[in-house]
Length: 462
Ligand code: MLT
Ligand code: ZN
Image 1 (cartoon, rainbow, N blue to C red):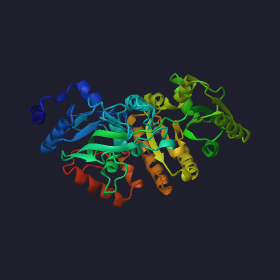
Image 2: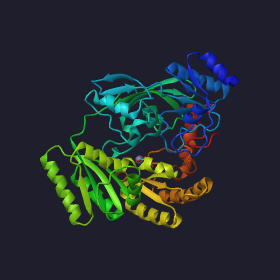
Image 3: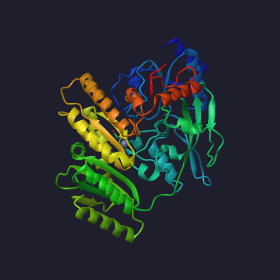
Image 4: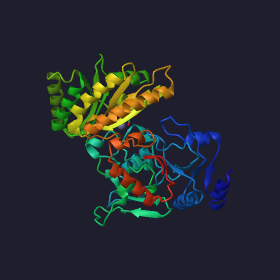
């Protein structure tokens, strides 16, 4: 053990510390798999006091900390490849309280999102942010990246659902931010500043989440469509006539991978585009309205085929076609873009982007899917067998530069919901102005004067 680690063990005798090769590898990486994990050690605190103790120790010894949740991130935000201490919050994973009057659930940061869902359901309510990694990601990580997912169209991002946060700042101080207040017009809202800050300003040690009523019964539909213009037109039609809970699209290439990975085909025949959509059907009238809209889209030739789930099991099977995509692509080491534009700017951006990708990736498989109703597209570029990792990344980075310029022209963002981390750091200036980035650095300096929290993520370390 190093002198610094000896000192940490001496100061916090109850702290669980891991330094075995397997643990360093496991806790040093996220789902990006691009960097070789090389942390100094892994600390698994069980209390807020231990988190504070670690942060104070890190300041004294000049050791960087990588805050760590479920490490399902796709931008390298939780990668520890430079001798950092990984501070895993996985042992701090309990519900701390439920307030029926406020309709809030207070939890520790290491709780998996799925466990948060279950706890909310236990009180007859829901925590509505949801996405495929629900079983493995943690609520603390969701907060650090302002996670979005499949129901943003109805409920918004994580940011909308945080009533209060307790955070250990970079100087070790414990901040109690907003304390669950609905109305609080008393100056800067540091709670919101922490959300999406990717562990660079503070470590979330407790979160008070807003809950809401369960949605009405829903129906799930899979649609097959001829082209991207039809996807956008059908979105407009469905949004105008139905109460949407989700509207997700993917291409035939995505379907090919997800079927090869074990999902069940739901529509016979091959079509270029697919949509999984879910909408409220509180009564028979709503059900009839949904059938009428479906019929209208078929008549217009914008929907070529479709399936309406007749049971929960069938709905889950349709969802698997969309939610299984990330896992099915993982063996192909995808380079991931996660971009967004205003909903109104989607058609023009899509045409420019389609032309760019066809030109720049002529012999490479590119998979599109995502949350089209939020203006958020996932572009996964698959590494051809036999191509060296470094050559593949270099080519993708070249194209991402061009994509970033296209996004800038259309007023979009280089990261819709995965965060900047290490992967998108070179392109931050396509989305944020120089003045904004300078302010971001200044804010970081205030909360973390010695730059020990997740240095190198979001922007280069000072
Ligand atoms: C998803 O929506 O499935 C993920 O955020 C996208 C991805 O894996 O690129
Ligand atoms: Zn997504």
